[in-house]
Length: 174
Image (cartoon, rainbow, N blue to C red; front, top):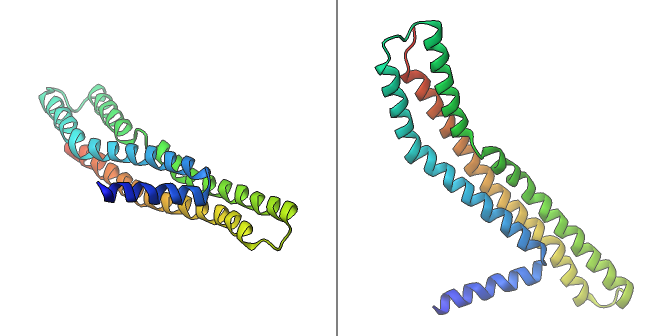
């Protein structure tokens, strides 16, 4: 329990040093990871069952060679593809937003530095240092958040592409 309290205090201290913009970085990061976990779950646990159902429906068809049968096949593949790609655009957008939110922290931190210089003069290095921390920490946090999301989202997109290709290959057409 003490380690959790210590961890919470470290996080609060980090946010206090980096400024309120870190709450927005944390919110974007949390949403991004929730969506990525959901996509991983869908691709690995749900889609194999969907694929099996589509293959069973295709194999149960008496006609798999007509123009009409090919349109049905394409519709099923398209629907499965849309389901595999669901929310990936939101994830990519959040990945792109994280560094921008961090840059917002840089701007607010530099404003704090300039306010300190205007009111206290340039002789108070301690006050200027807190503004510089508010300028650099959000940028770093936004970049780390984006990198984690970039790696996982690219892996998810590759898994989704392989799943689509597997479905297409599993539905023979003549």
